Length: 81
Image 1 (tube, rainbow, N blue to C red):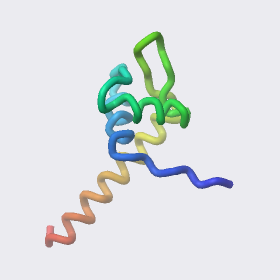
Image 2: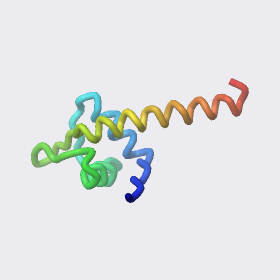
Image 3: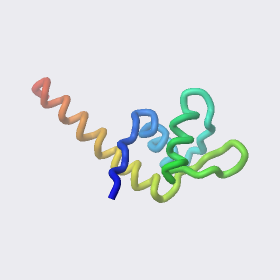
Image 4: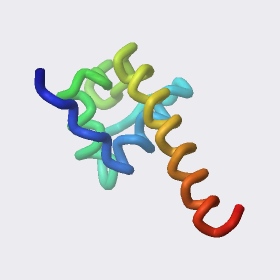
């Protein structure tokens, strides 16, 4: 079994936007994360320019959000929060 590479910050951001029903256009800063997520099966091409999240992407988004909350709490504890 091969390990799944963790999501980059930009990939996490794309998923968090896409999970809310937003179409994503691969341009500028978002081009590489969208294409990488598509290769992983987390996004799919809807038409000539728009990409949408897949069910696998929704599951990954939930995991990414949990990880972000965990990181936030860890940082808060470091500073006595």
